Every structure is written in structure tokens, then in C-alpha cells.
Length: 426
Image 1: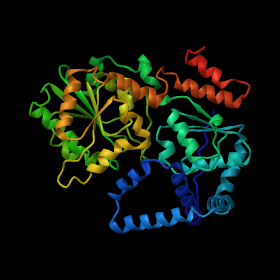
Image 2 (image 1 turned 120 degrees about the horizontal axis):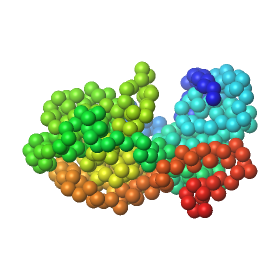
Image 3 (image 1 turned 30 degrees about the vertical axis):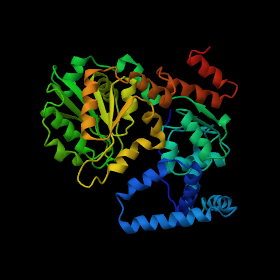
Image 4 (image 1 turned 90 degrees about the vertical axis):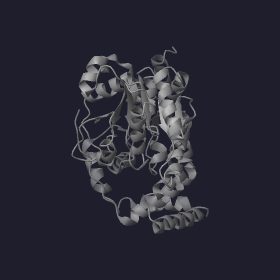
């Protein structure tokens, strides 16, 4: 193995504008129910002038796309501009020096990676993408048609690819599941409960509710739920022998939680892992995975706001509660809180019957109390979450990705046959 840092991308403003126009067309073609939800949510962070400006521009652009040939002209302009308006020549020289036989991408939406892949595509080097997460197709902007094959988590991702990219056919896509959950089926990543409690700093005689914090952009009012849960324990609405383990989102600023954490009496804070010097970067080690896996196993109820953590909790079959309301004065975030569960990538979880979505403080406390009393409640629904989102739950999705990569490099290998063997169908 050799490691070569990717060349940082440089793009002109004119080129970025063309890309933004093509992204409008991509979003229009994708027609995802997530898009208007995200626009309304982003309005919380825009002033009135910014909101109107975006709406007027969006309407003008959508009207322009009704003119026959507009999209094709824009794509031709983008292809003509990419060489003189970016540093693709420098990137291409770097790729040429590496002499690759093929390219494999997990995060093609990162500009430096996309441009390296573009160089490969220009050189007729085969390119394979394995989509990293279940929201990546709808959540990220348009990517040029660079790929010969795709590997995705589930059938929903396959549909999104074909909706958003007309050049992608069913034969180009393979469903391999979600490698990031494989370690939940590996007992090496679990600590005994006594060891876990000691490591996290929890007493041995109290039930634990896991509160998985989300990103501030999604639910700015989210700390309120943590405080309501703490006060419910204080008031004995939830048994007094219960603790809350608060786990902050890896890239969420802890500062927004501190005022509430300073008020709570039954909360223990557990930071997920040491953050790197660059925002969003961390060197996640086996210890961090063991702590996460053991935390998910040994906590009695999981609370999160429309987070991927619901999938993690479903793997461990723990009662899941999702707050979907804002009961603060003015209820500013009430609609966006409810709509978080209506995003396209999240709908299979919402409709699974395994996540109890609550719309008031009373429902919230009642659902947590019910989960503490019956750990098997909604268990079949949680199995639905794993089946629908992850496709496979046998801990062998990484192997499927590897087999997919092998069959991509060696077309004589039968990928479908390999997957059938892994899945026990042969």
C-alpha cells in the first residue's frame, strides 16, 4: 500500500455557477421529498432577504430548465470549462504519475476526490463507487457521470441513483449492505457490562438511557429534550434509579449543550472520541468502537432526533424514541422537528414500526418509561429497520464490498454468485 494525499481543488467562480445550475437540474430530476424539507430548515439560519433571493433565483432557474436542450447545453459548457477553469491539469498529472489500473471511491462528493476520479474517467480508467452512507445520494450535489459501477446500501439507494442519474442503469448497481455496522456482529468489540460501566464512569445499580445528540443544524432546540428527560427523573415520572448517558455528536459543538448540562442532575457526559485538529477529522481506534458498541448494548433505551443512531440501536434491539416537537414559546422549530422524520433516506426508519416518534413531552416521557419496562417492545419493527436500511445483518457487508471490488477488477468473477455464497443462498 502507498498513501498519496489528493491535490486540493481550485475552481473559478464561473465554473462553480455552472455546477450550481446543473445541481438545480439534478435536484429537480431527483424530486426528493427531502429537498423542500431541507430548504425550510435552512431558512431558520437565513434572513428574510436571503430567503426571498433563493426562492426567486430557484424559480427562474427551474423555468429555464423547461426550455428544450438547456440541460445538454449546460453539460457541454461544464465539460468545456472544467479544464481551463479548474486545476484539473495539475490533478491529471498527479494521477498519471500513479499509473492506476482502476479507481475505487467512497466519498466522490468531496471535490478533491471527485476531480481525481474525473482524471481517471478522462483516461478511460475504470471507476467504482461504494456509497458511504444511506443519505449520500440525495444529500449531496450533482456529480458528473464518472462511474462504471456502483455499490449501495439498499434498494432505496439504487432507486435514487437511477432517478438522479439517467445514465445509470440497474445493471450498473449492486446492493452490498452497510459495512459501517459490521462490528455489531463481532463479539470482540463488546466489553462486559461491569467493565463498560467502570470505563464510562457509571454506578453499577442504575438503569441507563442513552441520549445521542445530533448536529445543531438539524435541531437547534434539541438540548431541551435532554433537560426534560432529566427533570422527569427528578420528578419520579421516570424511575429515580435511572441515569442519562449523553453522547455528543462527533462534530457538534459541545458549547450549545453546556447551559443545559449545567442544570441537569442525572446526566453523565461521554464524548465519542478525541477530535482532530481539523473539524470533522478524528483517528477512530478499536477502543472507540468498543466503547460505542458496548454503550449501545448496555443502555436500556436510546433517544435521538432522527439520527443514524436509530440504525445502530436497531442492530442491538434497544427501544428507540425519537422526539419530533418543539414546545418552547413560539414553537419555532416544531415543523422542522416533525419533518426530520419525513426525509427520504429516513422514511424506511419512520415507517418501520421500530422507532417510537413522539410529539409532546408527555408522549416522550411515556415512551421512555415504556421502553425501560419492556425491552422487547417494538422489537419486530427494529428488525425491519435493519432489513430495510442495511439489507444484510450478518456482519459480512465489508466482505461484499471486497467481493464487489474483486469482480470489478476481474470481470471473469461472478459478483452475484459471490454474494449468493456470502448470504447463504448457495
